[in-house]
Length: 325
Ligand code: UT7
Image (tube, rainbow, N blue to C red; front, top):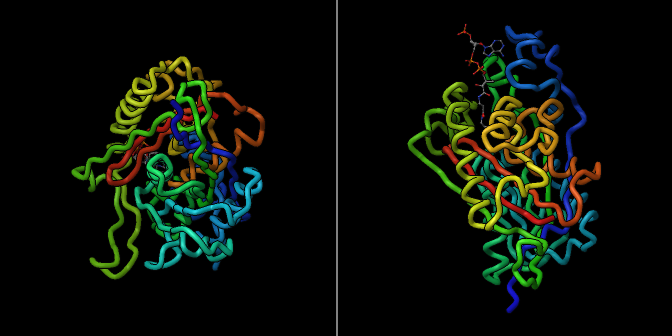
């Protein structure tokens, strides 16, 4: 009997041209290149220029993903944008992308799960494809986190960057074996009680402003490795695979110490971990598809490889996805 598998046909990433170094930040707040690099692994991050919006970054990433997939934009019947920093309060950033791609069919909507948005998006896309309500999905993680940072708060402003990454996912008939291409499973979780550890101090219906990102970094750090490792174990177990089967680990790029800690806890060899945190910083929902694009483009991730993605962010939200590339 055959089943429908959601196959990632291709991917692409886009970073805005302006680069902000740790040295630049040291002129703005009481910090240093040494502190930032030692505590986070970050060296530089990209920042959208004035007037450059999340949909601009998303559109560029989408064009690359569409070209890399060998499909036409008109083949797409669902656009999902995972973002915390939409161009406007409404309509969704996804509908703006739909219009720019001249798509006249299907549906488009945004997902809000902060840094876990791309993993949540993979879960929604996979379930909609397997349920028969979409055939070809453009999923984008895109952020201009620079717009919601308090540039006087050294505890947060050194961590984040702007960017976008996209994938095209298509339903394909499959025997359903773990060796067959496609998304093997996704696991998503949340715990709303942890709101106060990572949030914005404003919003449309509370303050009529966007607010600024606020974070209790040390507390977030404590939850990160445990939550991420549990999601990965759940995903691997359901797929009937073990962590050593994983060829590439593509984690959310929050902090090199979190990446190292998770890899150590799960006995994933460091050379199997795709890390872009030093060059991108934390780009929230864009970080996983951006890292994925880098590793596909440089030839590390190849057809048939088992790829594990994970993320954790505000909410708290977290999750993992296992994909046979
Ligand atoms: O994607 C969403 C999920 N977010 C995350 O995963 C972030 C998780 N948290 C982290 O990555 C880390 O907790 C941080 C990088 C945010 C902070 O690193 P830390 O090792 O946990 O440092 P800390 O917050 O415990 O602060 C240590 C010291 C403090 O000074 P005192 O109290 O010891 O005198 C801070 O005030 O470092 C100080 N500090 C800084 N110093 C220089 C905090 N930020 C800075 C800074 N430059 N930028």
